[in-house]
Each structure stands twice: as C-alpha cells, then as structure tokens.
Length: 95
Image (tube, rainbow, N blue to C red; front, side, top):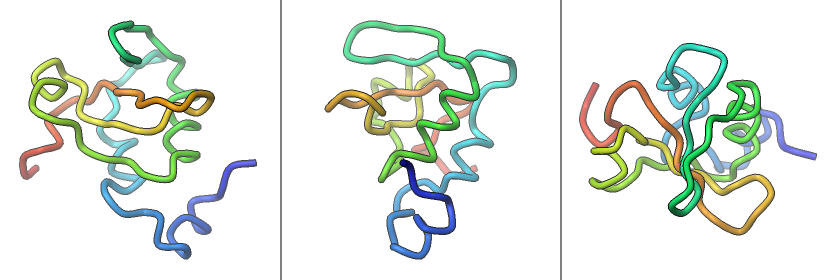
C-alpha cells in the first residue's frame, strides 16, 4: 500500500520535487510519455500520478533527459529502475 501525501511529508520523504509541483509539471491530456531505459511508452495520466505519489523520492533529471523533455525521475512502481517522466518545462532551471 502506498503512503498518502500527508504521510510522505510527515516522514520527511518529500525531498526533491514535491508531489504537487511534479503533478503541475505533467503535460495536459489523458497520457504522459515516459522512458524506462531506452524504451518509451505513453502511460495513463492517472497511473503516472499514482506512481509519483508512491515514489519515495521525486527528482529533477540530468541534462540529457531534460533536453528530451523528461524532467522528472522516480523509482518505477514495479521494478528496481528509474522511470523518466515527461514535463511541460525543464525542472533544472528556476520557474
């Protein structure tokens, strides 16, 4: 069972990019593009939001992923790997 947002904040696990900011960075629409390794896929928006909430840490990505429009990095919900999530703007620069 994943933690609630309140539990994450209370435990101090909300370092990096907050859940609210991460959700605000997602592109509009029913699907959000992701990368796992070298494989890209469109995920349902609700599934991406669930993965963001379940992730113990939401981080900005490095320059290459940023340049490809994928500004968020989280732990994949079902694998021991990083999932890169598309964003509407770079997360390594001030808003």
